[in-house]
Amino acid sequence: MKTAKQIKNLKNKRAYALVLAIVAAVVLTLLGAGLLYICFGVRVRAAKLKRETISMLAAEAGYERAIFWMSQQADILSGLADGTSGGTIDFGNCNCAYEIQFHDFIGARPVFRILSTGYSGALNRVVDVFVVQKITGWDMGMCRIPSGSTSTNPVYFKSGELINIPVHINDRHVEPERDIYISGDPQFLKKVEMGESRHAGTSDKYSGVMGLFDGGIIFDQPDVRITDEAAVQSKVDRFRDSTDPAFVFTPVGTASVPYPDPLGAVQLEFFGDQVRITNNCTVSGYPNGARDYRIVPGSGGDNYEKYNTYAYHYKPDTEASVPYPIESTYVTQTFAGKESDPGGQIFVDGNVILGSADLDQMVVQGKLTIVATGNIWIADSIIDAGARDPNDMPAKDNPNVLGLIAQGVVKVIDPGLADYGSPPMNVSGGSTTHTYVPVANAYSSSPTDRILPDPTIVEAAITVGGGGWGAENVGDRREQSPPGDTLILRGTLVEAIRGVVGLFSSSTGGAIDGYEKSYYLDERLLEGVLPGNIWFGGKYVPAPAGWHDYRLKD
Image (cartoon, rainbow, N blue to C red; front, side, top):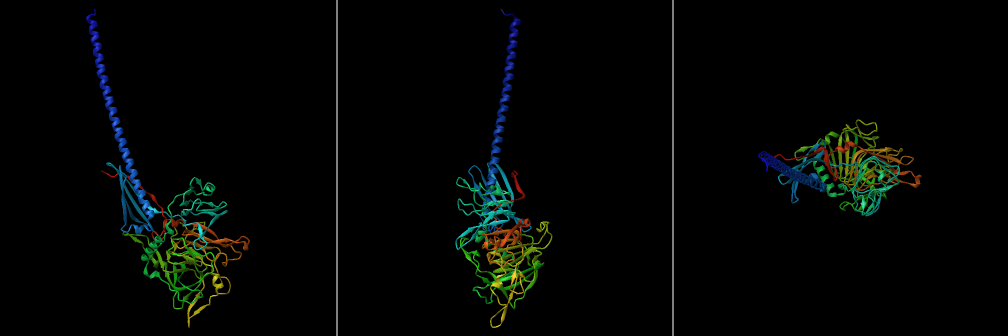
């Protein structure tokens, strides 16, 4: 039999076991409750994080929709007629509301604000971004030259060429052909953007040339809108309406010239801080250019016509050549109550001749943009006054800059055509009413025997809506001896199609007829040149330090 002591010890052990069991149960219950709480908290946090992520993605989707809308506008300022635009997107489990606002000008460059708020349940995220229109350097509607009324030929980048300027080429939608044409091994030192995709089906169109793009190459980029006539017209109209009426010209050509349809033009001559203006000049065209084409207005950019190149011009004897300070042309662009920095504007509903027989080269001191509904003909070197870098580019803090924008072409003339066309010194209509005006530099003792300097230098932001930039009468033009002059462009270039600059000629032993091109990017122009938003880039990018995202406060 168990003794009383044994029975007592047994009861104590059972009591201890019961206590331990109770303690263990309590501990396990607490642990279980804690784990359940942790699991619940993790689940809640995961759900919250998921909703935050969804709301952020919804906000970013609103931002992308806003950017897409902006890229589709013929003219963004016209699209933002009251300064704002926007919309909403419903994704089912989330939604967003976005707004595009005109924010302000930085100098002459418009800045836009995109405010997009994404919602998922009770949570939200906001994307708040300041964006600007992308400016490339050298934009092309296509890298081809017209060769007939509906036909074009490719323009090749050749071995030995160094292209030290960012390039953009629109998508032609012609597969499997590349939209950039390469012969040999030219080197692209800056970034190249293509509207087309890298691949055509399963083939890589660029596999053999990727090593040529030292600055990189990216694909599937939005088209530059220089080929959109409505976009060009909208910007030209706004420029005209914001220009001082004293510098809005509609020249009429009344001189009798050998070829039909004399062209009215304004002659502009730059000397320092002055611009000399001669209105109502008559340009005699020369219909010999086998390669001188422009886009037929209203054709959508697919039809081309030969145009009469500049041969020479007259001014009426009654028309004074008036010098004006460039600053007298200054105006500010105003939109949604905000003003840009001031700059000069001259608008010509017709054609423009930039050149003089009195100057070795023309010098621009000031900030000036010239817009012509017709052609802009360049008849001399044009350089910016002011400080320069060791590489002879205008220094970054140099405030002097020129913009040239034409709905026709922007071309360097062949001044030798004046001699070939044998213009009389005066035009008579019963009495002498017009006087021949030579441009460029004298080549001989004959007043009609002219030549451009070698090199010909043009420092400007050039935009060509009706064709391409280049030289006229290439293949037959008068040049320095031996042939093979150099055309130096320091600026930016936007052209709807390519223009002829120079041709390799067997008759000159392989030398170039026309010009050998040498193009340099003026990085000052990436900050904008008046007028605000005259650019045609289809891409909008965040301004430096322009991206912010956050939660709305409760």
